[in-house]
Image 1 (cartoon, one colour):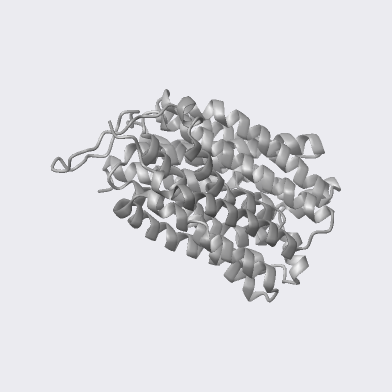
Image 2 (cartoon, rainbow, N blue to C red):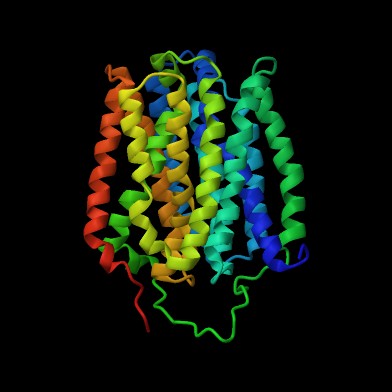
Length: 401
């Protein structure tokens, strides 16, 4: 089992997704206060820098991400590893607003963008009949990081300077990940696929190119729903200190609540992986953001500390669905031949959404919006996108050839 290519591909995805945390909003948000104190900038200024840097990274991702359709996976992974290690090193040297912009750009591009893109595209392309379950294990890598890293980082920051921590991250990435990639995917080819049951007839579907996908209205309606989680959660994660202060919660409440987020994320990852393989991603899309809508409602009405755990538990539930559906839906609807370029586009939109969310949250905070007001704005977006998806739910089928 442990020597099978199937196991190695899943483990590769798990580890890469875990290490994508260095560029994820929840992780960077932990260092928000330390960075603002070092550079003497406001919430809004930090949000604007974060958003603009993230936007730039999303634009570059569209071009670089598609190369995974043409380059050997192992070589592509090595490029991403070196990029992430350099980004962590650069981030440890941030001492001005300009360097912060470049540092966030590098972290978002290499971490949230290229690391997660490499992992999910590799797994979505290799697996067919068990794609849902494989992706669920892949994204448990991120949930595991979300469960363990926030509390660990808050603790380490009490006696280690934040910039020295990023230097350690750079060294870990450069030592660990090349060895992992060599052992797991050195022999993985672009045309490597999971073995299918010969007794099951395979249905041939149209293999869409990216230029065709961007003309398909379904892509935009699905994307509106998939982007809800990135922009809302990123805004919350980056400005978690504001939420914590506004709600009157203790310094460790949100960090501890991420454990609830991770547990529910893992539970829905397993559940959705099984349901996708049984029913298809397209039929599950409509349910993806319902927990997120409930989370916004709860955040509006309640202030007690236990709400942080319930709120992040519901967000985690939507996240579990979103992580898998964000990869498997495109493979089901548009095929896997050009999946890298399609995923690069969807990942870039996701990264852009996080930029939008952080910029919007920062602006709203600076003009006096409360946490409850921001929850209302988030809830309205989720509700409208759900209605649009409901209206086209019967048209979300691949083109059979």
